[in-house]
Length: 419
Ligand code: AMP
Image 1: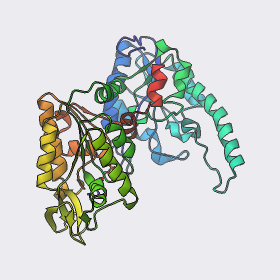
Image 2: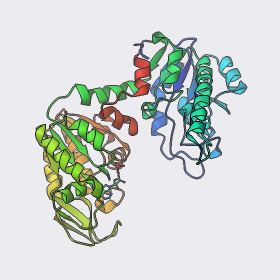
Image 3: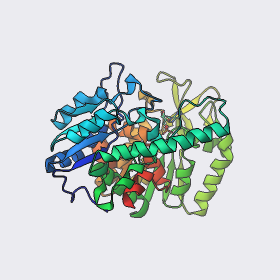
């Protein structure tokens, strides 16, 4: 497999797929440029070698051309970050893009308009009537497949080599994240630096495990995390269950949970996961106490109670001090740690305590030599909020992509480069 570090981009044009899906406020100001900064090492390496770059990205989930999701909003900031006056093509395909890409000189950068303005990027037909028949759906899919091939070929035609640095979309088999790789031989396609780091971090928690290995799974619902939990049960020594899903487990075990969030149709599943943990010799750690509120609000009245004795009219909004201590002890004795999802409603300042305690225990374990990977939207927000991002080994930029990788799935964006 080609590596970006070894590749000499001098005189070459590189199509770089990045994930510049950054949050914008109502005036189109970027409110968090982490994703843009994360791609800089790759972009700077190419420019430093004397290459030129065609940047492809998506922004949001447009269903067609929408000013709100135009990448032109990020152009000034990208130019500033790169120290280069970045050019822009108002459409990622068509004459303007082709002419501008062809004219690129070493050191120059062209940003293409949002790839998802075209249905071909995702390969999902758009504009079908709700009552479309199966025949019509099939025909639309077939037609899109043909135009997707053209679209992909056009993107590939701009460049001599392809670099995928968009881990956040690596779980999608889209034109620019996977299909395009077919147009480049093994020497001319590669991961960018960010992607390399993400792939290595995931491999470390999946295949190069130093034990004990502890996963902390939080967040709101067990239903969105079942596959991951099942996969982790074959790998970890300790599985800490936290956040809203705690109460599905507590109720399944016969506890009183008041108004706490609960998935009543997942009670059997919770019991099944407990059984599987036992069978696999995994130490499943559940909260024993909870910080509860009398409404879903930062200003709710609070009390600390046993997790299975939550009175009616109250709901669990974070773990209690006893659970914090127990979780921290397990975390601090671990050598590999994966954290996904907060232990409570961390958006409310009065219910951040548990998540902070988990973050701090992970930071301490990391200081003592553990490898820690934090990933999946809200846990990243947590470590940022608590100023712990540089105290863990790796903070993943990928939400869904990271979770799917940990579920053990082969990610199309990764496979397309590796094969
Ligand atoms: P997820 O996207 O599944 O990782 O869930 C993250 C969300 O879970 C955050 O917005 C938290 O506020 C929410 N959450 C965590 N604990 C609880 C809880 N006890 N009750 C309700 N929501 C929770």
